[in-house]
Image (cartoon, rainbow, N blue to C red; front, side):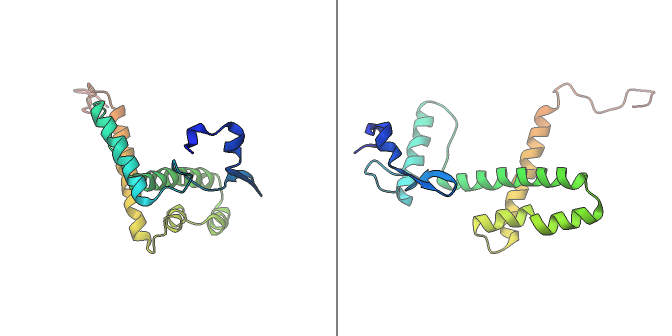
Amino acid sequence: MRLERLTPAERSRLLIRGPDGLEPAVLWLGEHGMPVSLSGWKDIFRSASARCARARVPVTCHPHMLRHTFAVATLEQLQRGHIAELAVMSAGQRGEYQRIFGDPLDWVRRRLGHRSAATTLKYLHLLQELEMQTRMQLIPDDWDPAPPAGGAP
C-alpha cells in the first residue's frame, strides 16, 4: 500500500511509544512499506535533482550532502553555544565545563563515525568558508575601505 493512502489512524501504527514519547517504528519507509535502500535513496535524490533542473532551479543534491549539512550545522551550533557559555565563566569553571561537555569537533566526529578528528576538520573548513561568504554578502557594493583623505579613519 502506498504511504499516501494510509489514514491518520493507520499512520499512527507506524509509531511506537518509547521512553521519550512517540518515535518511528521504522525509518523512511518506501512505497512498499519497507525501509528505503541506499540505491533507492540515490534514485530519490537523482530524481529530485532532475526535477529541479527541468524547472530551471540550479539545485542538485545527493544523500551524502545530508551528512555534510548535519555536520556543519551541528558544529556551528555547538561552537556558538560553547563560546557563549565559556565567555561568562572563570578559568576554573571553563576547565570543568570543557571536561563535562568536551570538544564540539570531537562530538561531531563521533556522531559521523570518523576515526580521526582530522577527517572531521574538513567540516570546520566548510564552516569557516561559509561564514566568510556570509560576511562578504553583508558588505555593501559601494563600501570603500580607504580612510578619508587628510583625516583620521
